[in-house]
Length: 130
Image (cartoon, rainbow, N blue to C red):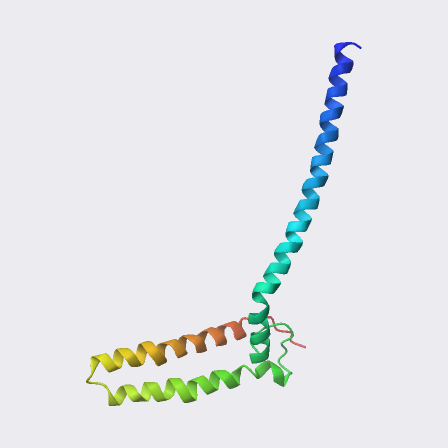
């Protein structure tokens, strides 16, 4: 065998190893992708179920379905029975700085942020206009 034939054989072996490494890489990539998707489903599963229960998860939302508006009940409930009374209470505790800070930090601001998050998530969901 001359040196050119030895070189061709060596190149063929390298290409063959490269192809087998490519196959292994694709197999590992597919397994990792499946694992990652299943982990994401596991990690987000309860959040998705709770948000579907509340009507926030935007899977099959339509303007003609009454179930698309069931998120308005918890939002209205939080506003009418938590945020509105706490905001009204601010008028009566106006002179005491500690009570005002406690009112805003414990109930008023946190519930208002929760209402805004729920309303924003619901309004930015996918809609079918049929």
